[in-house]
Length: 108
Figure (spheres, rainbow, N blue to C red):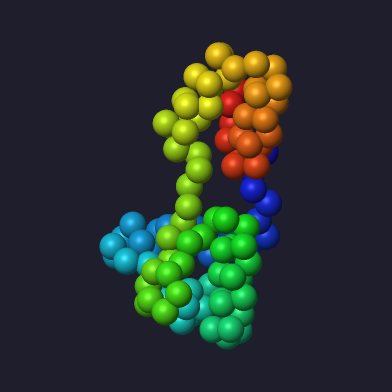
């Protein structure tokens, strides 16, 4: 199960990832607005706040260029879940599967 993002949120996440990889720092809200053709900086802020609420983006209040995309799909996280599933009770396995679903991990 993938985390449900709107098309615009997906564009913002992809832009932040690409920008950060290229420039070594996250974009400003104004740079996001300009690049994606959004109507205002407040529209960007609303999208970012929604992404923070969904647990996709982390930001440091009061700090410029502090946007960070959180990725719970790291291979080591998937491996950890798979290893634990081999040794836990059925009830614990169900809890782990639910947690993996919430995090968007593919355990197949």
